[in-house]
Image (cartoon, rainbow, N blue to C red; front, side, top):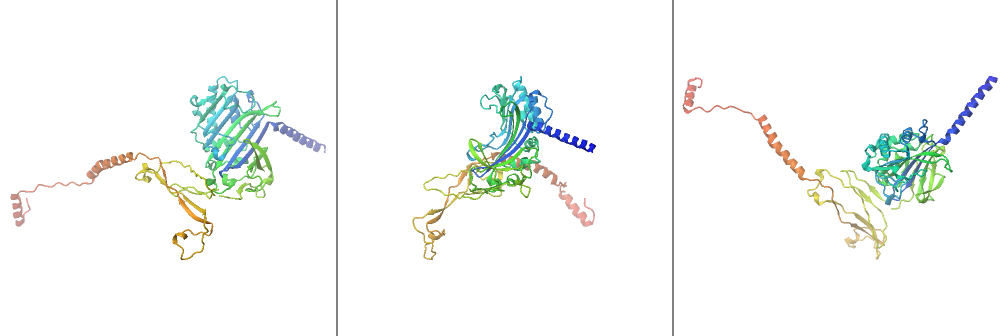
Length: 508
């Protein structure tokens, strides 16, 4: 019995000591993940991922040897190059502010990098060059092409975002690569920086085939020091990884105002990241707070209000840490549906050399008004056999069709009789107060890039000449047969051969 008590005491002591270790380490590391979904007025959908990792440590001492949630590759970079703040983004596409509003994390097309160094750095330019080479290997990007020709030192535009009073712009470096193409090679190392990678949590939705097949895609990494407590007696390092993507309604949703996680990302959620202290999805329902137009499935009773972009917004919240969020299917496929679909537009995208575009809009026009419809298009080169005989004149786009019911000042007679004139019953109409009409616009002349057709003409002429002269002569020599013909004999010899033939003697 005494031995049994000793064993129990040892077990309790070990469990108690383990709990003390967990309590001691818990404040030093924290990871949160969030997804904000905001329906846009254009009918598109905006999804913003936020992954934040906090670490209470001091890189200035260069004694960091234990990494738990913070990625070791970035921690070593901050420590080795004395980085105070680091901000890098990879963006494909252009954010259309007039149609989509303001983004949560603005970024220019291509690659953007700006870094604040510690004031202890003596050779900022040399450290900047080494840092870009290292980051080029971490993110599989062309950051090694950054040099003095595309690096600037802004004095007012890029203030530090973290704590401290570092305002000396001599320790700031900024560079962009506008032509950098963002692809899967940039997304894969970015996802590896997350504590759970892409195996659990919200990162499961980051499927490259869907993200890069969108109107706008931007991924970024932001590192800065922040206050660990309210009194700011201790600081922590914050790593914030963001992904912002806009899905086109007419391409991704086939023109329907209905979105879901599977339709956007081709995947659903089954669990939160086990290492995350918070994992939530926020759906912006500010435009329809009572749920009259916007319908969420599965429904949630959790609501939250927050100030975003200078406006107070209302969000429906899905907490992935609660198993009830996933329901009986153990899978969350959040569905956003609009109950009323007034007007909002039928669009069928074209396929190259298969079918043209189709755009239909049902609108109600007020009297004495002007309505303008603009369509953006990209100019492209055609195959040289697809150009018309006069390509420099341009290409015609067919007329648009306007079908309308126009109010009538005279009541229409809906009775079909043989005595009615033919022109009065061409478009049958069941309403007496309106009549149907169809209006066609003028054809549109579009100038497309036209190649220099004199070059193909010269190539064809030169090729035909070479074939006719070179190959024709060689073919003639190879296929012609030569025969040697003897000269015809004289008259005396012919007479002698006739006589010899009559006598039965061989000819001469």
